[in-house]
Every structure is written in C-alpha cells, then in structure tokens.
Length: 461
Image 1 (cartoon, rainbow, N blue to C red):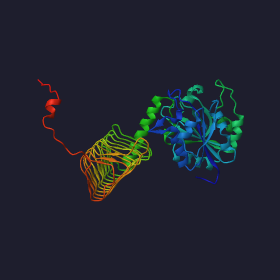
Image 2 (image 1 turned 45 degrees about the horizontal axis):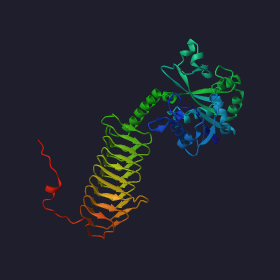
Image 3 (image 1 turned 90 degrees about the horizontal axis):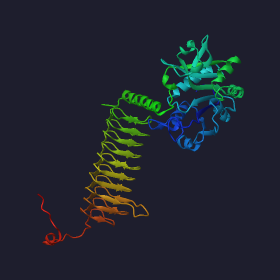
Image 4 (image 1 turned 90 degrees about the vertical axis):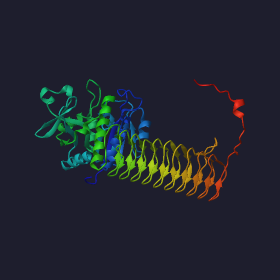
C-alpha cells in the first residue's frame, strides 16, 4: 500500500441476531459457510492491513472464536450508534495514520476496493474518504450529495428531498479516515436526534464545516454495499456469493455440467479440467487436483484430492487422497486419513486417523481406524480394526502386499507383516510374521439332524 503510514482497520460487529432470529451475533451468520465477519477481516488482511480491531457486543467470546487470534477486541456494551462504536476503538487511531472503518455484516468488501479507495484517500490527502456505489434502485440507502464534484453531505432516505432521492450514488458504510481528524470529529459528535445515537455519517458534515478535504471513492462493484439484516437478505448474499465463486472456477477451467446443489466455499481451490458434479458441497481449505471428478453428492471439508482421482457420493473431512485414486460410493474419510496414489476404496467403508499406502484396495463394508497400512494390500469384505478397548485407542500396522481376508477382526495393537495373509473369519490378536498365514477361528463342526429337533418350521402358503 501507499506510503509508510500506520494503517488500522476497525470492524463494527456489535449487532445482535434479533432480526436474524439467531442466538449468535449477526456478523457470525455465514455466507458460503464462512461468517460474514471473517469475509471482512480477510479482505483487510489481503489489502495489507495487519492491525485489525473488532468492536464487539455482549457476545464477544463468540466473535473471538471466529476471528483470527491476531485481532484486537473492544466492547461496545451500550449500543448508541456507529459513531459511538467507533469511539470504543479509540486505541486504533490514538496515533497518527489512517483508519479504515467497515461493517462486519457487509461481506463483499474486497481487498482491491480497500486499496483503490486508500490510493485516492492519500493522493487527495483527504480527512475522510467514503466508499460509495451507484445503484439502479438506491431506495433505503443514504445518498451521497456532491457539490462541484466534492462530497458535501450524506442524506438518509427518510430525510431526503425528491431531488436527493433521485441520486443513485449511495453510502456503503465503509470509510477511510485520517486518524487525527477522526479523533477530533468523534469528540464533536452529538446524540441530538430522535434515536439519541452518535452517527459516524455526521463526520462528513464536520469535515465540510471545517473546510477539510472530503471525497468518495465510487466503487465500480455495487456488491460492496450489500449486507444482511434478516434471513431473506442472508439467503440473497449466499446466492450471490455462490454464483461469484462458480463463475471464478468456470473461468479457471473447472467443468460444471450442472450447478444444481453445488456449493463451493470461497477458500476452495480447484485445478483445471476437474469436474464437479451436482449435489456436491466443498468447504474450508479444500483442494482439488486437475482432472479429478467429485460427485455426485459428495461432501468435502478441508480435504485434498489429487489429480485424476474420483470421489463418488462420499464424505471427506480433514483428509487427503492421492492421485489416480477412487473413493466411494458411500465412503467416509474421517479426520487425519491419508490415501496414497492409486488407492481404491469402495462402498460402505469408513477410514479414521489412518494412512493407506499406494495401490491398496479396500473394496467394501470395512472399518479401518488408527492404522498404518502399506502399499498393494487387499482387504476383503467386512474387515474391522478393533482399535478401542473402552479406555485407550491403539494402532494397527499392516505391511506391504498383505492380504486381509473377509470378516477379519484385527484387535489392536498388532502388526501384520509384509505379504502376510489372514484367512476369512480370523480374529487377529497377536502379530503375524511377514509371509505367514494367520487362521484364528473355531474348526467347523457338523451335527447331523440338529435343526430337525431344535427349530420349528412353519409352512409358507
């Protein structure tokens, strides 16, 4: 950013969730699985502002859990308007520099807009630079009144004349302030109005009266103005964000045959030629490799999927899948599961906190927990690692090229050596040497005529 001046950001986030009908603060309502507050903080940091203050209300602890631990928090215990909220963050502008003030429920502010507005702010050496936008329908917004091109006032809808209501340039509620001017202006605010509140917008009139430089950066993207006060508006923000994210991935070469039910979080990365099928939800720090196929109906959160892999109707959380692997349908990878290249995991398999080596096949109806499995292994149907004894969890180690027969129960902690076999129906409760065959089951017995005397049959008609 420009010059070597102190730059701080103040995010106003003290609003409650009453109109949202929520127990949480409004700014924690999510747009594409990400709290609105976090969208705003991330934009500040992407713009190069590292000193971020958040003005919180009664539920400050909830905001602290959502925001970065690098944020500074101040409390507005009594809500008396936006000017009053800014007063609570006085330490953010106690030293000279520039201060950015934003609303925590306007998630579409971008780093580019912040930087461009700041460039204008410094070039013109303004006391105040507000961020505005032109809307086709400005109803409900404060209008930016200009004289000879310079901003001279902000007029709220209810106070606007018919001529002023025709103005399309509106106030977004985001401002760059010179810190020295902000300190002075906040001291001059009064609550002499029907609401008995201190309005940050009144700083414009103060600057004009003092003949200080005031201007507006008219943002080319009207999205910066959008916020949410109720669930209907929140839904609208989600729809807008969903379309924006999908458009970005289409531009980057991602294949979307149909967008029905596809929700992709803003931090998800998808390489070219990957295909996302209907019904998929991709969240958090998920990364999809080139030519991978996800879906239909898959859920990935903080997951990494390698190139050319396929995830069919499965659930992956905090896990990784290598290249040329197949997962599903109806598979769950629980946290800290890692599949190597060429692994095949079939239907109704659950893997937890385990590493599966390259080219291993786990076909169906199997649970692998707390295990380290080698490469080129084969699991039959119905294998279970019994990793929990009611008090502690233990790990299982299985060497390369091992063959685990159907319905094998592996009682951890044990080691199964390279190339070892377990016979179908075996319960393994001790180590199996490399290349050995483990058979652990009761010898079959035949009792002739037993069912005739012990089971009553009813003839079906």
